[in-house]
Amino acid sequence: MKEFIDKLSLGIVDYEVPSASVDVEQIILSVKPEETKEGGFNIYNNGKGKLKGVIYSSNRHLQIKTQTFCGEKNHISFLIDGSYLKEGTILKGKITVVSNGGEIVIPFLIKVEEYS
Image 1 (cartoon, rainbow, N blue to C red):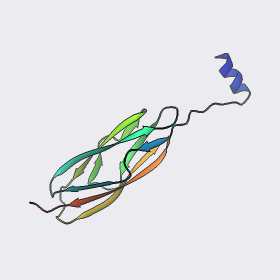
Image 2 (tube, rainbow, N blue to C red):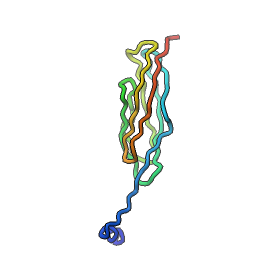
Image 3 (cartoon, rainbow, N blue to C red):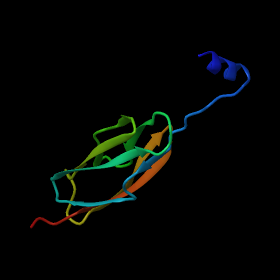
Image 4 (cartoon, rainbow, N blue to C red):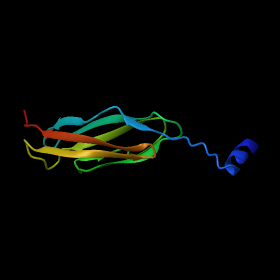
């Protein structure tokens, strides 16, 4: 503890900086009208320290179930809601991860298929 205080008094501060990464570059899925579908991806800490943050979607039809995270490896779940969507509709948007290890944008594309 004394060593830590001595470093601080000299203006020497060791920062543990997290670095966020995800295991997907984009999300492309299909859903039928009135159907719901679940999906997910992982966020990893490639740096040091504790990675924490929040996630949000730009489109109400892709709902983030796990909106906050904290730790080295985090699984993020989402739900695609096909309610009130017509066949042939294409939804585009982005999932934004805002963390102390950086900001990541994951584009998504959802195609609404025809009933079979």
